[in-house]
Every structure is written in C-alpha cells, then in structure tokens.
Length: 362
Image 1 (cartoon, rainbow, N blue to C red):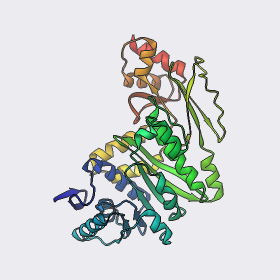
Image 2: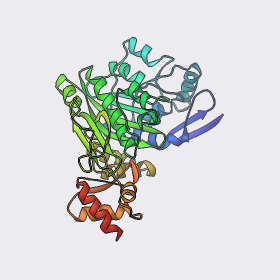
Image 3: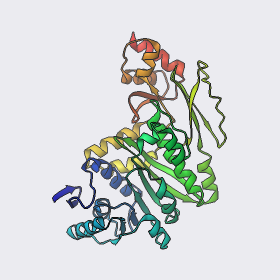
Image 4: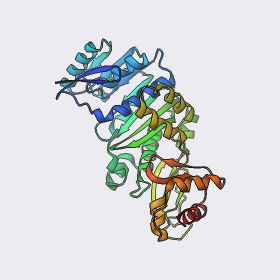
C-alpha cells in the first residue's frame, strides 16, 4: 500500500481500487472547471468513485459538502470510506451501480462526474435521470479506438454514428460523443451547453451544462450534422441538420469523401468559463497550460493537417506555426489545435491555406 498525494488529497493506493496517477492533470482541470461554475451549496455525484480521489478533491478544493460517491466494487467502497476518513471528508457512500442509484430516486445532483473504464454510453441515460436544469455533467470516454474509427462497427453500434479514421478522427470522436450526449439529453427535455472538450492520451472528456426545456433540447439536436473529409486534397465539409445533405463527393477535387456522423457541429468551449478555470488552476501549471491553449483555439469544426497537405502537394515539410502566422497576417483567424500537433484551424478557404503553405515552403 502506498500513500499517494494529489492536490489537497492523500489517498491510500492499493490493489482494491484503481487509481491512475497519469490522470492527475485531468483531475486538476476538473477541479478548476467545477470552481469556475461556482460550487457553493452544490451537490455532487461521483458515479465511478474507485478510491474516492475525485470526490475528495472536489470537497477539499471546491468546498462541496453534499457529496455522494458510488462504486459497484465492494473493495472500492471500503477504500473510499478509508480515504474519506483519512482526509476528514464527509460523504454518502453506496456500493451500487449507476442504474441502481437512479432507480432508487436519488438526486437530482448539481454536479455529476462519470469516468468509466471504456465507453460511457451504458450509463449516460441513468445519469440524466438524476440531472436537472443547470447540472454540470462531466463525461470521460476511454474507448478512443472506437470513437476514432479503428472499430467502425462498434462506434455505429454504441454511438449510432459513423466515425472518421483519418487525421480528423480525434475531433470527430469528441463531436460524436457530444452528439450522443445531446441526443440522450433531448429525451429528457434537456439541452446541452458544452463548456470544455479535451482529447488527450487514451481519453476524451466533455464538460457540459444541462438546460431544461423542449426548446433548448431542440436547439441542441439542431446542432447535430454530418462531416465529410477528402483523402486526396484533405479538405473537409460539414452540413448541419438531422438529414444528411453531403453528396459524398469533394467539392474541391471531385474525389470520394469519407463521411461521418451524426456528430455535434456546435461549439466545443465556453471561453468565458475556460477563462475562469484558468484563474483557479494557478497552482497547477500543467492544467493551466492546457486550459490556456484551449482558450486560444479557434472554436470551429475541423482543421487542416499541414503534413498531409505538403505530402499531397509533393513538397517538403513546412512549419505549421509559420503557416498560422502568415494566415493571420492575411486577415483570416488561425490557431493551432489540440487535435493534431502540426495543424491549423482557420476560416480561410482551402485555396488560401494551400497558397500560404506553398509560400512558406519557398
């Protein structure tokens, strides 16, 4: 047994409950986001508590007092209770599944955290039963191979969406996850307002506020749509709406497009909330750096991969940062993106991006 320190928490780490130290930065970001929305008087459900580290940190670093921690593993429940006592945190602890808790009439909760092993799909419906207007719902997916198209049939089965399996796959995966959340929430007359979306290492995580009302639910569903990606010239296209309006042919070169969807085509970030989270992440430099990068990222669907473009153009490597700088100087906004290292997000048309890439090469 090892005593593991993270944030304000001291957690006894053993074989009885899983704790991944590599996810500490994501927990730092989550603490910052909970603080950003204002945590005073709010109730929290950690629906996959394991050692209890997230709930304990929310209590100690966000001031949450009405905390419920659940885990279906009996050994994990014992670990949670021990760690709560060690950190002098009070919480309700249940050895129940999410489905059992939802069936017991628990909630509604103001903050809900879901961080399962694998896909979150089997649990989202029941967590929505325990939500209300204004709930902050945080959802992690670690089935990134599914969301990124390596297992196409699994994504169609689980998320009812066709993924991409190319350079755009991570962003498409995040948007498929958000799209599934929007469709699920609409069944409860809830709309979603994304605050933050992250794709890193082996996980994707979305933060969203749920808003009650049929009109808000319809507004969310209307932000779903489809995307097409051309493997030859590396352009992309999007079409919002429940009915696909893409032809499957690239409008630039006429080649076949790789179609994906339905997926979320609305915003990925609430920049004002991300800005607040940055102020709360002051003592957590790595989390702060990630939030600052995301705050600067242009919030539009998809991007251009510079290495893919230079390869198709038959030229050598070009600095993506130089391309971004040149596009900005030409009058179009352009930024890096979290979804690929050497890529550019911009409102500039493909022709302008291609011309800039060639100019930067010479």
